[in-house]
Image (cartoon, rainbow, N blue to C red; front, side, top):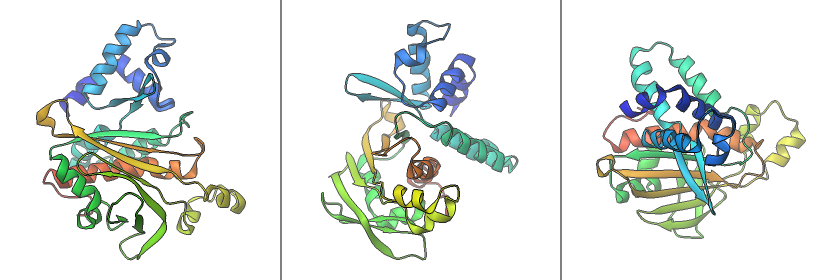
Length: 267
């Protein structure tokens, strides 16, 4: 967390974060355009932001694209703002604005967090319902996690598991898990009162996917690096993309807390 505070103290690094907030998934060349800094200086700032886990870089073919990673911001809000119970709602509101800000031209979300656990334990937490129901507050998936298998989904603590058309794409214990995401459901209609019934019906056809990549952290003491990529959206204006943007950050924060021995959000 100290690294995050140090990284945020520099106005040039804050400017780079603002640029990623405005349009996520940019290359070094794109981020350098119009700045009174050399590309080498921008690269150094991005390296410091990555070291503080505020930015993550993901290779897309020959390009390396940079993404805003808001998990440390959530952790700062939990520890330094939530502790005093002052301005908590304001902090979460601002975080939501950051996550749901201007639409991106690359309709996907990439988040990275570091958890002091083992790859095996983290994979178990992603696939074992007894773990999942704790950090997802009674919601979430259940499956035998074999490629091609059905992923049933529980919509809330009082709901039943349902087959919403989700399937396991990849499942490599301790390394990678990927499955298709459910479409918009009738319960989401009340949260989309800004669209017509016809538009909601069309949006409900969209099927995305989520992928969890697990690998050792660059610094052994940091434990395990978890990268979550949610993509496959039809457009940056996707209603599902809008809906999951803030949710994954809260879920990852609760998962990290649970695995590191703390209390979950649900508790």
